[in-house]
Image 1: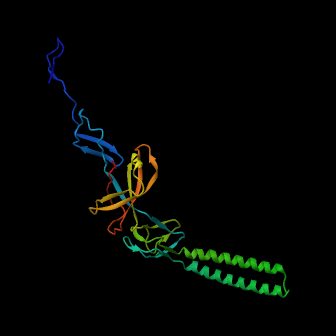
Image 2 (image 1 turned 90 degrees about the horizontal axis):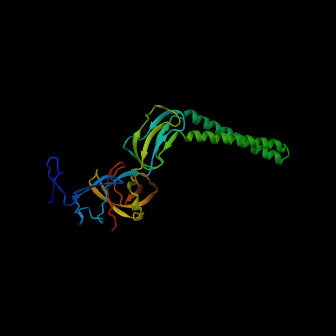
Image 3 (image 1 turned 90 degrees about the vertical axis):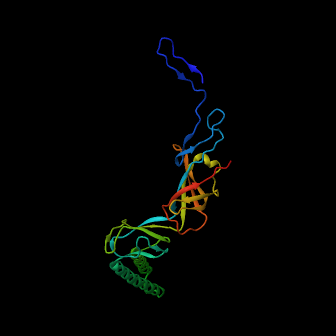
Length: 275
C-alpha cells in the first residue's frame, strides 16, 4: 500500500491511501412493501454490486372480505330480538334484528280494510254507471279514493317491512353494537357483518411490476397465522398508481377454498420476477 507524507512544516502524519473501493456487504432497498435488506452480495469487477443483480422485496399481503357491512335500522323503535351473536354464522335472508312493531302492524291492518272498502265502492259505482244510475264523475271520485287507499296501504306495508332486518349475504357477525329492548333510532349502527367464506388478497407492489404482473399471474401466499402457504392468483389490478411511493394495489384470490382462513390475517406474497 503506498504511503503519503504530510506537507513540509506540519507535524509528520502517515496516512494510508485506499487502493480500491470498499466491497458492498449490505444494500438497503426501499420497495413498495417497506424497507428490505439484501445481504452479502458479491461485488463486481469495480467492487460495486453487479448491475444485473435483482432484488425481490418482501411483499406483505392481507386477507380482506369481499362483502362486509354495518347493519342499521330504518325506523325508530324498540328492538325486540337480535338473533345473532359475535362469531355466529348466518345465511342470506335470516332475520337478524326484529323490532317491536305492534302499532305499525295495526296501521297496516287499517289501511288494508280501507283499501278493500274503496275497491268495493268503485266496483259498485262501475256497475251503476253501466245501468246509467250515476254519472262518470261519481265513478272518477270512487276510483281516486281507491288509488289513495291503495297508496296508504303500500306505505303502511313498507313501514312493517322495516320491522325486520334480514341478512344481506351469508357470513358471520363480528360486532354487536345494540342490545335487545334498546330503543334504536334511524341510521343507528346495530351489527357489523362480514362474508368470511369469500376473501380477497390485497397487496402493494412496485408500479414497475405492471409490465409483467397481470391478472392470472400465480404466486404463493404464506399466511403468518397458519404457517402455511396457499396457491394464489392475481384477479385485479388497481387503476391508479401512487406517484409518491410508485406503487399500485393488486387484488388476488386463493385458488382453493380454505375454511381455516379469516379476514384480517396477513402474510408474505412470494412473487418471483420473470427473468
